[in-house]
Length: 517
Ligand code: NG6
Ligand code: CA
Image: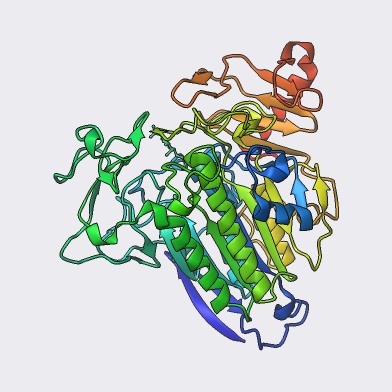
């Protein structure tokens, strides 16, 4: 047993750690050895219909499906938001992202969005004695106001919000800088070749997709026409850091190897791994061994690569005999998109595949496909396999995992997060009474029972670049998801009393008068 003082920016919190696996259990808390490891696989832009255990017939994801066979397959699970940054903010803080300014899709040089004095999911688990790591896509900003110093120490970083280790794609695969950050530094950086990044005007003299399309191996369909790295033009301008630049084809191998290494190094103590894949976000540039294997072009091939990554993690747990007492969660940050800015044959080769399954819309959308995602939870020691139709949200992971590990959530923290552990473990089918969904337009919707209410707003209904129905409408929308899960019939005028009730409830949640529960 030891005590360590953790300094979070201006606030000093005294946390008592009982983290050594050899330590005695403290009175009233379970022995640390009985605490399950937690591997949270957070995928990017994987839709409800992209996984074969969720009904995909044109693609096979056998490793992901193993989780469905052994664990619980949730059919009514949600991210908070229909894009990445806000979903991740909600996941890690237990606070709805729309309550905080600056949680929209983050630029590649955005400052750290989660304030280090905010209580987070990794804080809870670290406090419980877990060793914690994030490996993969971050997209929650890094560094102080004004953005990070890519050539020096990067602070604040995930290490300041509860992670012991990090290995990051700082933003997205399609945004500069195209380098990895390990803990507080860009890796493999030649100090003679410093990195500069700009999202406003061109910087340096490197070719761009706009001016030098002849240099591209993958062409943009919309946006993505700035600095070319590895034959792919990105969002944003970058110069320098040549030796540090990633090779997209190797990205899944690189981050999977880091994740496996973390598990191996920490096999003797409880660990929390937040494995945040780049797959299947754009640019979809899988390793050559997956190219052509799905018959669906790079989007399908990236899905096979993702399935391989999941398989590597599961195999590592098996070989270390950790599977029984490890919770593995598989889910996605938002719904699917086919053309997200590159001509990568995703549209042409989609065939009969339905990335959104039976739901309407997609990534960015206020319709169900925006936030209804696959969620699989496996814990062989405790969980019986099955299917759960309970209404669940990733916003509840914080309070639920804090409860599992018997950690108090400080008052005022994670106010939207509800302890739904019994539902997530399949012991109860009584999910959330209601939850709020958040679209890229900022529009909110509310699900309560079978009803879904979408706030009126004047943003576009349809986006032609992505070919996605965003679902924004100037009039209120009300759907009965039990009869009409693909949101075809707006029944607002037939059920004015339900509509009014939903509107009042959403306003109360927004005002914080009713907790997110
Ligand atoms: C959009 C990008 C899209 C993707 C998205 C973020 C354009 C035209 N589109 O602005 O390609 O990067 O941001 O995706 O630039 S997310 O999954 O990280 O939220
Ligand atoms: Ca995403």
